[in-house]
Image (cartoon, rainbow, N blue to C red; front, side):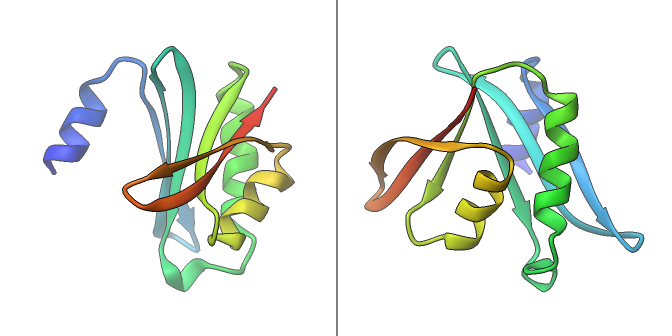
Length: 108
């Protein structure tokens, strides 16, 4: 809850809940960090592989119109990488955070 309190008090943050069949399936969030607008999302495992994240991100990007947008995705997370690519994000760079290799994705 401390993490969410911090997120929700940041005026740059935009948060949306992902609903599927009347149930909370996950969330999407966008914030400004280091002068760049980033996005992230989380989807419960039971909702993976159904196109829910792709559709939710598509709708979110209609609301968050600031560009460029950035997202960080672990190199091994092929599903999330594919969700971002479907929405037009492209690999912009690479990073390593806490031992996890990740792609930096960008949407112009």
